[in-house]
Amino acid sequence: MPRRDTFLAVPLPLPLGPSSTPSDSEAVMKRTSNNQSQWLVILTATSALLLLALLALTLTHAKYSSSAADYDHRRFANPDHNFIDGDNSYNLELPRLPRFAYLLTGSKGEGPQLKRLLQAAYHPRNHYLLHLDLEASDAERLDLAKYVKSESVMHAFRNAMVVGAADLVTAKGPTVMAATLHAVAILLKRAGDWDWFINLSASDYPLMSQERERADREEKKRERRERKRETEKYEICVGLILHRG
Image 1 (cartoon, rainbow, N blue to C red):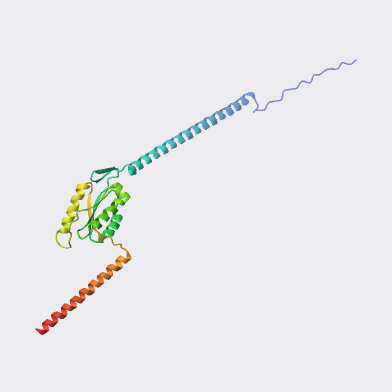
Image 2: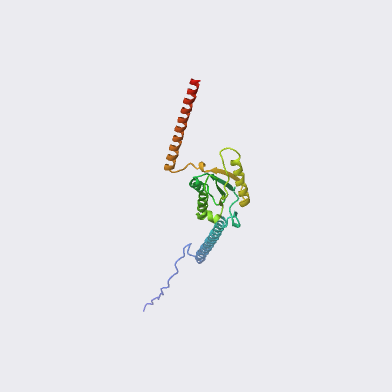
């Protein structure tokens, strides 16, 4: 009986390519692990920087808001200036700027113009003295004083006064200078903290009602006609006298 050889099928290992060696696989895994570590470090550092930037921005905004609030409080709530009226004084904090002392003068019937002039020139840091001369009545002075007292801002700062004992003021003579010096003395005594003195009269405020302006113009025209008529009469009389002579 012929002999049969028996063969076992043993699988042979496949040849490994040049990039499939065990050492290369380990290198690939190591590089992948290093890349992941690098990305993790970069992400952590970026997050930390963003957090620090956000924190710095928040602190800066809070500091700016606090400074702005302090400035507003100092500038508007506590101005550094003394407005004096009699025994009452108010400490207010304002920047050091020139302060003006105003003398506003008027005569009979010019109370409303003085009020408008005061409204136009008024500022809380300045001082105002209103004077109606002797031609004006006591009722006009009292009305002007009530107006000053009724104005809430003027009443709060107490920097506007009305002269009660009026001075005589005439177009000629030293009375205008005497009244001005008297007003300066009052302002130095009652409100000494000022730098410049300004003297304004009711006629310095040009605005008036149309009715008042028309009435004034008609009055001036009538006065000019009367003066012209008187001049003509005088010339006629002089001519007659010279002719008879």
